[in-house]
Image 1 (tube, rainbow, N blue to C red):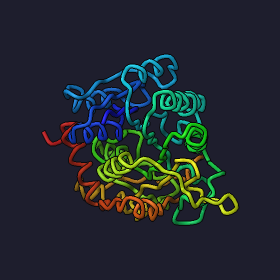
Image 2 (cartoon, one colour; image 1 turned 180 degrees about the vertical axis):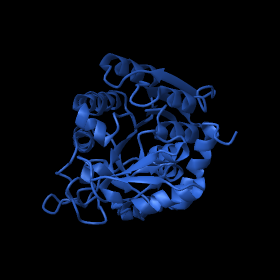
Image 3 (tube, helix red, strand yellow; image 1 turned 60 degrees about the vertical axis):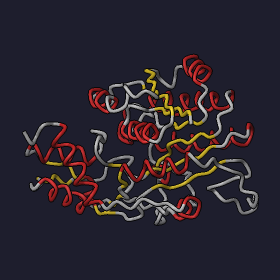
Length: 337
């Protein structure tokens, strides 16, 4: 297939590009290479696939309306995976307008590109953050998600609503994936695993928010990529049994679907830190702090719909996944030399 992947120099995007290229797809990757975190890491990820025969890289921002129009017209992708977004719950509190520009305006440009160029399927990144103030566990795609606790979460909920309107009005198949705390090699420096590993390696204290009482459904990158590919290959279809009197929040009479993709095994933050300590052979110095604004105490994914529709669910243990990350981190930063 010809696939457009946005956020192609990002953590998930780069890994997806590699997976698609390795199976024989032609990939156009788009990324704006912003400096939200060290652009050198993005360039290093990109080196893994930029010279592949079937890969083309475009440096562009989703907010560039004319540029996105021209990209779709020139490359005519059959399918699109939108992973480009301004990420980070905490940064959205400091700089909310960055999320409007990228996650809402930029996503509208992607929807328009798909609409006008007969794209067969749009898959896009949503987030477990959309569950917000919901305390019912595990988080189900049938739960109410009308109480986001950050603008980042609100922007992801907005994407789901925008996608539904395009699926309904223009018969565009769209599938949203609510990712649950993705981690692994080549991960983002603003995520807990990267921060903790860096601090422990340097002998610095780690900041443990909510006094370590968080639980997170940590999901390993390889599991996420396999799930993405399964979903990409099976365009969303109408739910002919959908009933407006008893509406199913994960489907529609339009070709629109929402899935959770998580490990379905929430882990206490202190146990996660213990896995890092074990992999590094070094103890962490912990600074216990209260919960931060915008954070939710726990995440726990109900993945029954993903299993039912794709016979697939993530299963990499945290101990195994953390060990792979620590090995990558030590190699990448030359700590074993």
